[in-house]
Structure formats: C-alpha cells, structure tokens
Length: 115
Picture 1 (cartoon, rainbow, N blue to C red):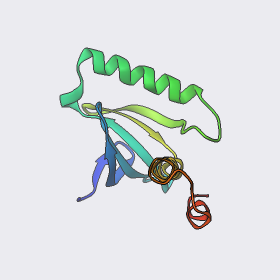
Picture 2: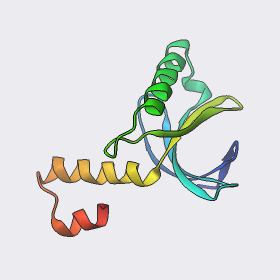
Picture 3: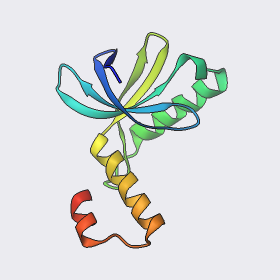
Picture 4: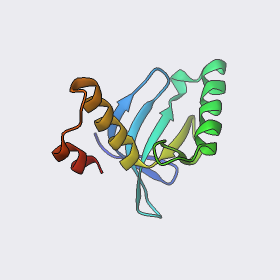
C-alpha cells in the first residue's frame, strides 16, 4: 500500500477491518509516534454508523486499564472520522486472543514476544 495522509497521520499498512471501519498502522508525523488508527470511511457513514462510532470514541476515551486499548486521539479529516490508540496493545491483544482461541494456552516463548 502506498502511504496516505489522514490529518497529521501517515497510514502505513492495514492491520484489519470490522463491520464499521478499517484499522491501519499509522504514524503521527509531528510526534513520530506509531498508532493503530480506526477509520470510518465516507461510504460507511450512515447516521446510525456515525452515532455508533461516536459512542465508541467516548467509551474508548474514558476507559483506562492495562488490559484495555484506550483512545489517544479522535477526530475528523475530510470525509473520514478516525480514532487512534496504542498499536502495541492492539497487536498484543490480537496475538493473545489467537493463542488462547487456537491453543488454549500461551507458550512461554510466545508470551515473551507479546509482553
């Protein structure tokens, strides 16, 4: 994927997608900080989807716990709404979830990689 700009962010590569949006590894250009950025593209922006995305933004901004990925920024750029969070926590949760679902236990070698 060629890089694309969303506000102060540069999209680096896709990490995944869901029912409402796409998640990218992105870099905040001024802070030189990597984040996981969820985008709600214009073609997904029904009134209901925007309300759900706003609720997600508020919930993610209020939650703070070591096991929860919380929001670090949110906004709108052009015709896209976005929310960003720590990309390391997103990857860590995805690896842990796949290990628990697939094996039932995380091997020590894998646990070290995730920690």
